[in-house]
Amino acid sequence: MVEIEPNGGRSQLSAEPATISNEGFGPVTVAEQLQDLVLDSLDVGDFLHELSEYSASLASEAGGPDLDCAVTLYRRRRAQTGAGSSPRATTLNEIQQRMGAGPCITALEEQRTIVVDNTAIETRWPDYAQQLLAENIHSVLSVPLNLEQDATASLNFFSPTAHLFTHEMVTSAEQYACQAQKALRLAVRIGSQQQLAQDLQEAMNSRTVIDLAVGVIMGQQRCAQHDAFEILARASSTRNQKLRDLAQEVLSNLTNENIHTHFDT
Image 1 (cartoon, rainbow, N blue to C red):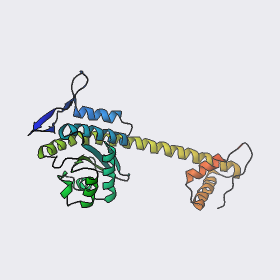
Image 2 (spheres, rainbow, N blue to C red):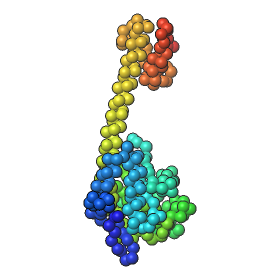
Image 3 (cartoon, rainbow, N blue to C red):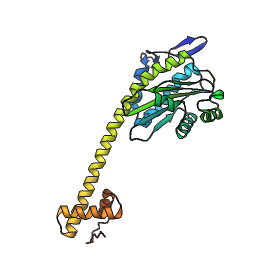
Image 4 (tube, one colour):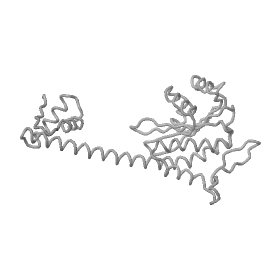
């Protein structure tokens, strides 16, 4: 179990080094557990899901079993990515993104922790507050994660209890966020390398397909490589079709028969 310290009758998330049980093989720190989540995740999206569930489980030790967590990640030139510990958390996170306003967005934009003590009287984001109330959420805590220059993220906690997030709980959540952001930064870096490798492989595959199609045109048109590529490129432009897709079409049309490839240019 996570080590929990008393706080006036209410538990709070413990600061580093918090530990969890490892089935009798010795304590595992929160940092180590987060590292394991990175290693066990298939991709960034999978890690975000695991992170939201793990964060919710830790926070629930302090704030009650109905506490949910959502994680939001923004990367430059990438679609916004999010995950939640429950369908409710995921929905509330998506609603906020569609509205373009809320504690999570403010935490991201201003890089500071945002607390909503009571959604019933919240005036900063009244429309979103109504959505929260409809889901029986009465307090929210959004903590930004400091990633790299081209990425930013936040942890968003939702509770059915008003005034849940005390100063002590907020401080503890911020300390936890310092550990979580290191793990997320690593996951993003690994994901970027995986994407780079995938993009490179796709580029190599595209080049192979195009080269093969050029070879087919050279044989059919009895022309030089440069001329064959020009024929393919002009046809791609005329048809408003990607060069790789057109090259794949040329190869797909090949049969054992002696067919002639013709482009209207």
